[in-house]
Amino acid sequence: MIINHNISALNTHRQLSSATNAQSKSMEKLASGMRINRAGDDAAGLAISEKMRGQIRGLDQASRNSQDAISLIQTAEGALNETTDILQRMRELATQASTDTNTTNDRGEIQKEMDSLTSEINRIGNTTEFNTQKLLNGSKDSTTNGNLAKVEFDLTGMTAGSVDILGETVNFDTDEATTAEAIEAAITGNADLNAKYTVTVTGNKVEIAAKSKGEDTDLKADLTKGTGVTDKTVTNTEGKADGAGLQFQIGANENQSLTLEIGDMRASALGLTGAAGDAGFTTDANVSNGTDSKGVESGLDVSNAKNASAAITKIQTAIDTVSAERSKLGANQNRLEHTINNLGTSSENLTAAESRVRDTDMAKTMMEQTKNSILAQASQAMLAQANQQPQGVLQLLR
Image 1 (spheres, rainbow, N blue to C red):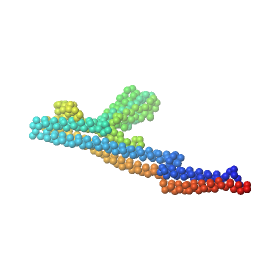
Image 2: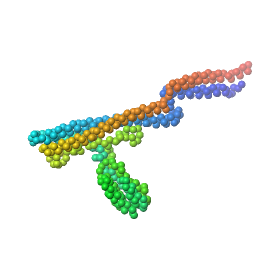
Image 3: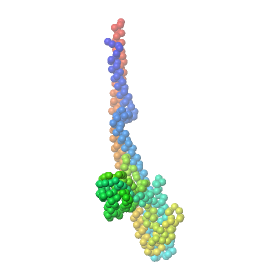
Image 4: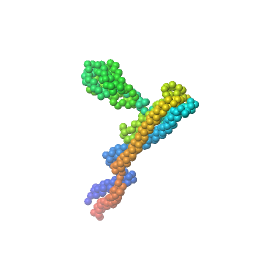
C-alpha cells in the first residue's frame, strides 16, 4: 500500500476531466445549435462552411439586385408605354391632317398639338429616372454614348515574325515601317474591314480605330509572334464608354453580371424632330426639351397633305423603334424573373449543404451530453472512493 501516489485517484481524475470537457462541448453545441463553434471543432469543415456562407449571402444579395433591376426596367418600360400612346395620337393627327377636308387653319391647330406632344416625348426622355439615373436620354447606350474602339502598337525593333490583327496575319517585310504599311494594306484591302476601321501609320507605329461607336471585342492585336519587338504592349481602348450601359450583378462571384443598354428615346433620336427648315419639318423651332417652353427643335410638318402623309411613315417608324425597345426591356425583365428563381433555388440548396456541415444534430448531441453527464457524475463518485483508499493505511498504525 502506498500513499505518496494515489494512482487510482489520478486515473479517475483524468477520466473525470475528459468527461467534464466532453460534457462542456456538448452543452456548448446544444446552446448554440452548431456543431462547429470554433476552428478547433472541425478546421476543414469551418473553411468549407465559411466559403458556403459567402456564396449564400452573395446569392441572396444578387437576388435583391435582380429585383431592383426589374424595378428599373419597369420604370423605363412604363415611361415608354406613355410614349407609345403619344405616338399613336400623333399618327392619328398626321392621318387627319393628310386629308384636304381640313383647311389651313385646321392644320395649324393640328400642328400645335403635334409640337406639344413631341415636346412631351422629349420631357419623358429627359426626365425619366431611377435612383437619380436618367434612363431614356441615351446615357445608358454605348452605341450612341460610347467611344470609338481603338488599338495602338509600335513595331520598333522587329526583325522577323508576324503580327496578327483583326483576323489578318502580316509577316515581317524588310523593316518595321514596311511591315506597318503592310498591315495598313491588309486592312484597307479587305472590304469588310475597311468599312469598319481606319488605319493610321506613323513611322513604326500603327493605330487602328473603329469608324462607328459601340463595343468592338474583335479589335485587338497580337505581337507575340514578332521577333525583336522592343515593346509588345498593345494599347487597347474598348469601344464602350465608362458608365454606358447598365451592369446588373446577378451572381455571387466576379463577372456574373447582366448588361442592359437602353436607347435614346427622345424625339430627335426617334426621327420626330430636325433642324428648322429641313425637309418634312416645320420652319419654326416650336418643340421644347419638355422642361420649359423654349423651342429648340422643329417638329414634323403637317401643314399640307404631302408632308402630313410623309409624317405618318416617320411616326410609324418611331412607334416600331419604341416597341422594339419595350420588347427588349420586357425580355430582360422575364430573364431576371427566371434569374431570381434560380438564385433562390441555389441559395436554398447551398444553405442546406452548409447546415449539414455547420449545424449540430440536436438529438445526437443530447444523447452525447446525457452520456457525458452520467460519466462525469460517476467519475466524481469514483474519485471520492479513490481518495478514501489511502486511509486504509491507518488501520496498520493501530
